[in-house]
Length: 160
Image 1 (cartoon, rainbow, N blue to C red):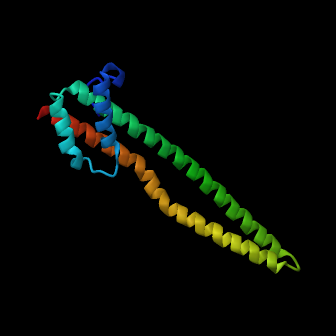
Image 2 (image 1 turned 60 degrees about the horizontal axis):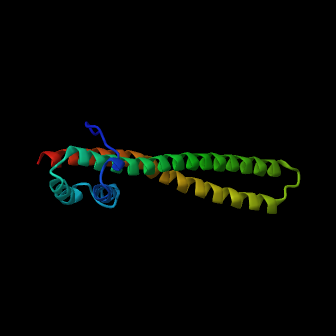
Image 3 (image 1 turned 90 degrees about the vertical axis):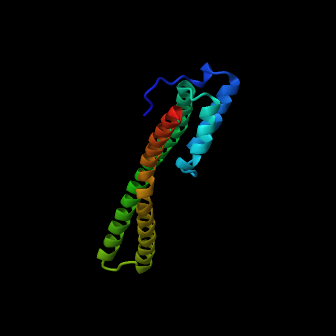
């Protein structure tokens, strides 16, 4: 994404590091469209003579922040998936228990009603969660697209 070497923040003065971190933190905020941040980035770039080393550090810091978020999201997707698997197994276990109870000569209908209520709730929760998995899985892709757009913008402002 970034074609030039990236120097760590520790290689810059304290003031430069703080400025780099501030603009990188702003770029990492997903509530702002990347294009809407271009004026601030352009001002920052001009204030630093469009120095690719400094802009590379901005990208590196932004990448670090968004990569950490992406990693957390992916781990969350894994936990979410394991939770869905466990819930699917619980649904299957409840169905088996209902079938076994109904197969008895004298089924306990209170137990069947309780199992049916549990089954209904578990299925509702499972279905609701399944509908949100698309958003969860899309988030890492959106973060990657944002990083690419930031890299492109930083390279563009370096040339202006």
